[in-house]
Image 1 (cartoon, rainbow, N blue to C red):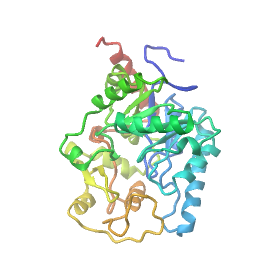
Image 2 (tube, rainbow, N blue to C red):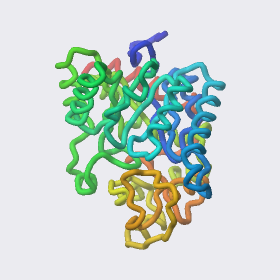
Image 3 (cartoon, one colour):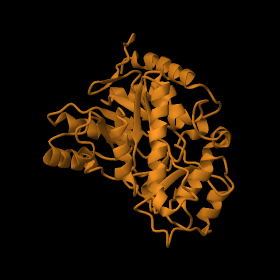
Image 4 (cartoon, rainbow, N blue to C red):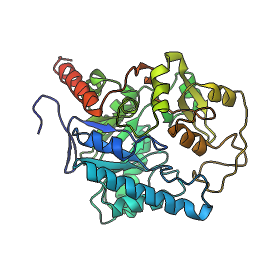
Length: 360
C-alpha cells in the first residue's frame, strides 16, 4: 500500500513499491541475500543466474547440473528470507539458458528478466506458468521484434520491458565506438521512443528505465518521461547485503570518475569496468592462456579470446582482483559508503517523493 504520491510499478498482479527493480549482477554478485533484502523493502529482488555454480574445476558434463543446483538453491534461500517479489535474470547468450529458465519455472519465481540477446522462445519455455516475462532491450526496434514474434507465435506479449541505456555496467547493447565516442543515444531519448511505441499497441506494457540511474531525482525524471519504474544495479553493490566479496565493493568505494573505463570484452561486446592493473594489461593486448571445457557463452570463441571472461568475473566475485576486474555502471565512482539495503531504499524513496512533487 502506497502512502505518498509515488506510483507503484504494476506488472500483472505484482505491485512493486517503490517502483525499483534491483538489477541482476553476475557473476555471483546478486544472489539470494541481496535479492531477499531488496524484496523485503517492497522492490523486486533479482538473482543473477550466470555462473552461480562452482564449476571452475568441474568437467564439462557437470557444468549444467552444477549451475542448476546452485540457482535452485539461491531461489529457495531468497524465498525463505522474504515473502516479497523475487525474480531471476537469465542471459539469452548462455549455453545453458534453457536449463536455467526451466529451473525458474520449477521454482515458481515471480519474474524472469532476459537480456544479452533476444528471448524469442521464452514464452514456449515458460508455458503454463504465471511467471512475468521481461526482456531487456536497448532500443524500441529490438522490442518491436520481440513483441511481434511473441504475439504471432505465442499469442502473448511481454509483461514489461527493461530499456537499458549506454551508461549501464557490464556488457552493453551498443557498439564500442558508440560508447567510447559518446555517440550512443541517451537513455532519455530511448525511453521516450519506446514509451511512444508502446502507446500505439493494444496492451499496457510497463517500461522500466535502466542504466546510470543513481538517485530519486533520476527515478522521477524517467517516471515523468512515461516509464513505470526503474532498474538499478550499481547502487546495490555498495550495500551490506550484496553477496559479493568486500574487496569487490572496495573497488567501487576507491574508484574515481577517471577509473570508469570501457573495454572490448572477449565475447565481442563493449563492457564498462573499473580500471585496474588487469584492465590496463588487457587493453594493451596481453593474453591470459586458458582452457575452456564449458563454453558457457555461445558468443565466445575460446580459440581467439585473449582471456576467459567467466573466470575473470568469478575471481572478481571472490575478491581476487590481481587478474580480474569488476563490472560497474557509469556512476560507480559516486559510491562512497556501504549502507544497508533498507537505508538505501529509504533514501531513494525520500528523494523520489521530493522530486516527484516538483512540477515539471
